[in-house]
Amino acid sequence: LRFQAAHYEANVWVNGQSAVDHSGGHLPFEVDITRFISSSVSYSKVRIVVAVNNTLTSTTLPPGYLHIYNPTYRVLETPFD
Image (cartoon, rainbow, N blue to C red; front, side, top):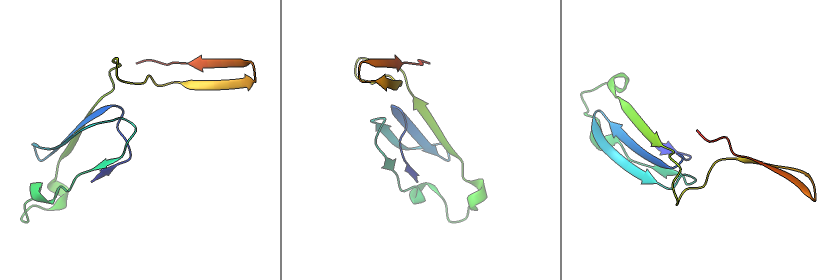
């Protein structure tokens, strides 16, 4: 199971068991989930739950957009949750 990114912390469970905890919002991560899946269970019965925490702290970067209109005029938008 591969994630391109999860902004900032992610916890992944497979069939109720913790599979991976990840910190580092802008980086991809992956986990092999085969050990959490019984060979007798069909893939339609596998439950994957992902919890993402994007709380702003002193170590996280706020999301935002930088609009550059000309070399001297810029606007930074920070749409916080």
